Length: 609
Image 1: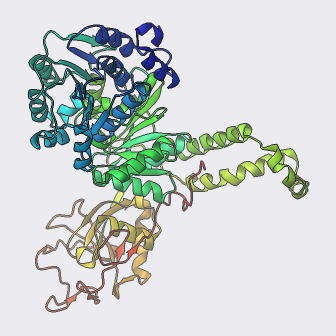
Image 2: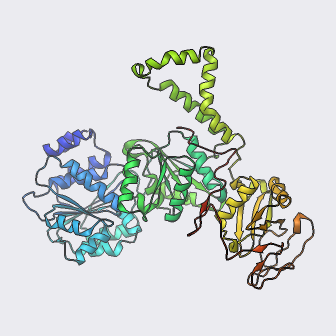
Image 3: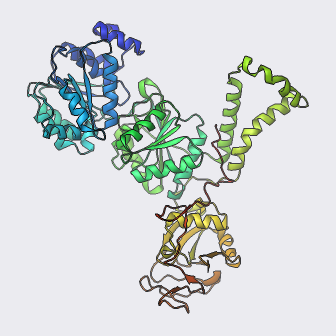
């Protein structure tokens, strides 16, 4: 079947043909004829990326009275990104229909401009629930003439807490309207909306109810918590042509992961609710143009991202609500293409995989995080493939060739190939040659062999978990991934490392390392956890002191706690003086970054560039 067979009006058919639409998707094939020829309520279940906007948008546009300026169709979407995307699609579909106005109403943009557009006469309004409620309360919008209400991504709107808003909005529309509900899943709340506001709705389902896209391959990697970011980088390097979305749970985590990727040379950026609308639009423009290779986003911000050819969706953390996994993974394998959805989980989170498998009715493949050798091999042949298929601009390069030939005349073909390949290959080989195995067997520590250390630096010295890790990395040259289970107290801290790095820290006691003119001291802690009565071995010896450390009055081994704080190791503790931040952000303090990403060597740039 083609779009010509669906009975679309000539002006609509001309527009969609120019947009490259040839054959309708299953949801379009089933809904468009039904909706344009009958007056009915409808519940349609289909995964994201299956063409739902055209499925309801094309028949909706055919039903409008263009001689009337009243709002006749209302489309509700959960996020401003989806709201804007739907309005743009409708404008593109109707480019040859004169007299039609579509207005997008959403938060994050000036409301007065949107009010002016609505009052000027818009037959179609695409809105987010929150901003629409605001306009209803201002009496700035008239919904009394609405004939069609579309609830797009209805399950997500309910997940985001819009239940009461939807009830209020639908209560302001005529009871004679038709309601078209489109959803990826059918939870109870969606069923409640359907039963309350629809009369014998036509039901259409493409694929299995609540199931995931069958064109998506689901993979999960099991790592320790401290290795989550290292695993993300390893995965990105293993797929040199990745064009993906990385999902995080919180806005802070989203920004942090994006910042780390940028620092490590990846083309990445963040998308979350703390960004202004202008910032969000710029990020999405860069992503759509593929200037960005990886978009790091929260669930809410990523709703409505309609970008073709996304190759991978990476769950940096699994969503709190397992059903949201369906929406995340639906960002790839759109328009009938295939894609890969990846989850990075810890041993404690692995049970969630079974729950998600039940919801999406598809199995995950447990895979090993690629080794350094795997990545090097993949990158090498990716480079060779690029060299083989590179476009040669003969006219532009012709004038340079004589000098190039002369410079390389002493090299035969085999030697020339080796040198060209090595120029790029050496970068990632140096980085990965001593890389660690990131796969977790579930024992909570690499090989189950770790040492717990005490260090006489804490919050009073201006340290937090991130900055003390940067500090320890700088003075020891131990990779930051090998410093974990950090516990920063008021005047001291604990951390763990693999046994093989024990001497790296104990030898620092002889190196005379100082911080704020006070010696930094490391001691092996005999207890597994830093409790109130922890036993410690002083100076790396075997004596167990068993002394209780006071968390309120501080600890004193011959020093004095009155007036200036005196360290037990003889140096003055400048708790009220200058605080230096190693890798963290402190207001009023200079940001100093130590360490960085050093998995087998400093990484200067993205390997696949």
